[in-house]
Length: 204
Image 1 (cartoon, one colour):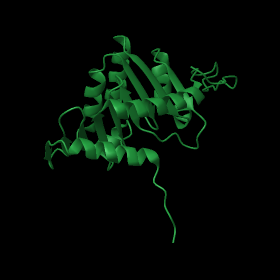
Image 2 (cartoon, rainbow, N blue to C red):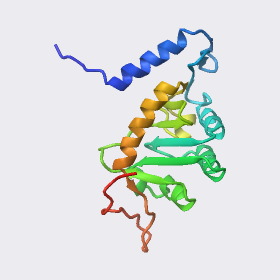
Image 3 (cartoon, one colour):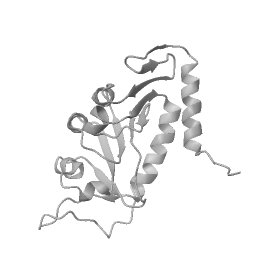
Image 4 (cartoon, helix red, strand yellow):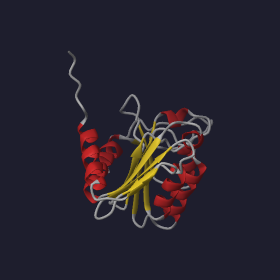
C-alpha cells in the first residue's frame, strides 16, 4: 500500500482554518462565503462569478504597508490596477511571477515593470505555481484562484482570505525564500525580446 505524505503547509493551513471556524460565524451558500470572529477570521470565495476578484481588489485597496505577491498566471486588469494604485500611494508592493509570464505576448511582467513595481521571475522551479498575497503582515490570500479573468468568470476555483498574523508570518517567510532566488525582471531587449539577467546571484 502506498503511503502519501501531506505537505506541512497544507496541514498548517487546515489547522489555522479549523481554529478560526471554531470561533463561530455565518455562512452563505449563495455567496460561498464564511467568516469567523475574534483574532483569526477568514472568508472563502468560489468561482465562477463568486466575487473572488473583488475580494482581492478590496484586500489590496485596504493595504497600508506591504503587499507581497506570488502569481503563476496574471491577466486580471482590476487586480493589476489595485496593485499599481497601492504602489503609487506608497505601499511596498513586490511581485514574484512564474517564468511563463516572460514568454507570453501580453505579459503582466512588462506592465508592472514599466510602472516601476518591483518584480522578479522565479526560474528555479519547473512551475512557480503559488497564488498568494500577504498583506500588511496580517492577511493571507491563497487558494487555486489565479489572478486572471478566466479564474473569475469561467473556471472552478477557490480563494481564501485569512486574517491571522501567525499564518501571515509563515507565508511571508516562504515568500522571501522565493524572492531571494528569483531574478529581477529587466523588460524587453532592444529587439523587443524579453531578457533574463544571467548574472543575478540572488539576495535582498
